[in-house]
Length: 135
Image (cartoon, rainbow, N blue to C red):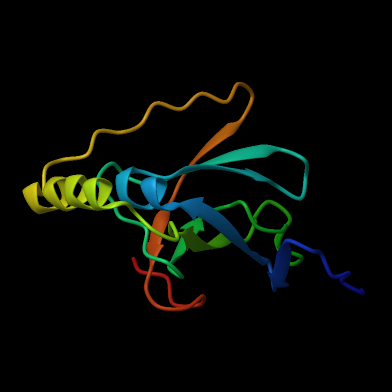
C-alpha cells in the first residue's frame, strides 16, 4: 500500500495531522474554525468557552482520522496544530483597551457560530507535541 502525500494532511498510522490558522481574537475568545476533511465534510473546530489557544498548541478530535486497517470500525484521531495570526501593530488606544480588558480577567462568552451542514467537533487538549495526548 502506497500512501500519497496531501498538501494539508499528514498521516501517522491511522491518525491525521494538520495545521489550522486562526486569528488572535479566536485564539483569545473562543475558536470556531472551519476545516475541510479529506472525505469532503466540513468540520467546525470549537474550543471550550474561555479556553485560550496558544500558538503551536495541539488539539485532538477523536475518530476523525483514517480507518484502522486492523479494525474496520475503528478510526484514528485528527490532531490539529494551531497557528495564530497576530496583528503587526496596534494603535495606542486599541492597545490600552485590550490591556484593560485582559487585566480585568473577565469571562469570555462563547461566540455564536453557524455553518449549516457542518459537523461540530469539540477540541481536546494535547500535551506537548503530537503523540502525547492528555487524558
